[in-house]
Amino acid sequence: MSSTSMYSEDHFVLLMPGEAERILSASELTEQLKVWVVQYADELPLDVASQQGAEAQAVALREGSCELELEPGRTAQWYAIRLEK
Image 1 (cartoon, rainbow, N blue to C red):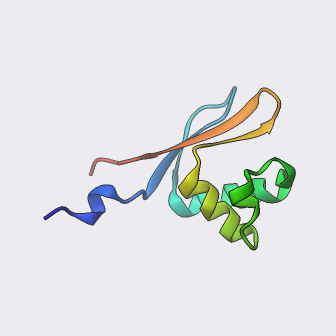
Image 2: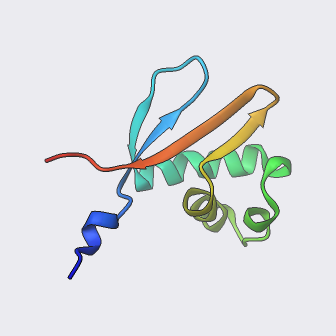
Image 3: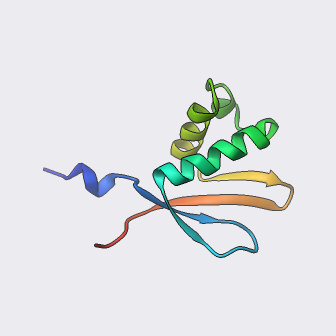
């Protein structure tokens, strides 16, 4: 029997061009993505843009993508990681 916590995505690494990588919790990443879905609404993938509200869009983006082009040549990327205890 497998443990569901082994597959949980509780933490993410956020990569931004020219910046140090940041380790964020799922809720912290969602908050950052909420800012971006409002700021870059025209750049969202159609499946994300079809969600109702910034919170739902941010969660859909977090769960279904690993990057968002913020402007030409500047793409944010995030990946789920497991922190060792």
